[in-house]
Image (cartoon, rainbow, N blue to C red; front, side):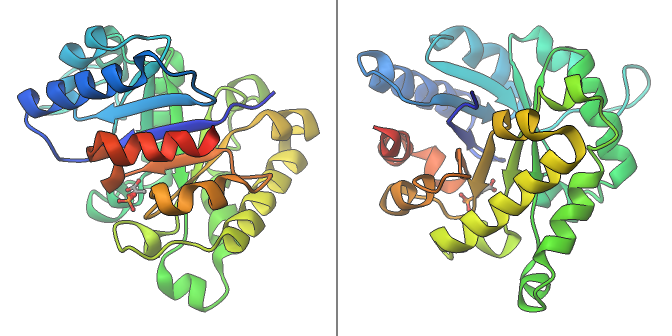
Length: 251
Ligand code: PEP
């Protein structure tokens, strides 16, 4: 059975003290509630070791927003998958459109990152999605198929461990959201590609999250679609009220 997941991506926001306060507040807000989805917070690297022991691991999983494409060594400024895992974090966002666009992460780099993450026991949350011009040219299926193909070198066993996130770049941080019908259509297409490659069982068990200006007011409608298994949340993950409002869409 696939999991419903609400994952926050804090991006480059919050000092360490602010991040600790946000994690504590979220932990408190979820403490006495029955959750109908897994909750994950992906934080800047420097927060991980402090935040991980602060939250109830039964309620909240912690993840990084990136990891290095190398195992270890002379790569000044990089943080390896092993280092992320050593903080107690369990997840890592990979292939986010901001990393692809601003840090030129190629298919080869992402392939190395995904494999290293899996080697070190992290669950990659692998992001795919088209830019506005591609959507306007009706090329979104082509684009996500190409991006997805970069994780199709994984074995069936390894692919079964990853979470996918469909994030139309035109909806990220813009206030524009894919309509529930647009989200369902492309999520179903993504699942069909997974089924073609790995079989129906793997596809049925694969969680595919929607990301892009998801908020409490639209989460329920988006998550009600049969192929939308939750959300990857940017801006709204920085406020406990908003993030919890999205988590509550599953209640
Ligand atoms: C994101 O960057 O993963 C994201 C979905 O951002 P936002 O929710 O702010 O659009």
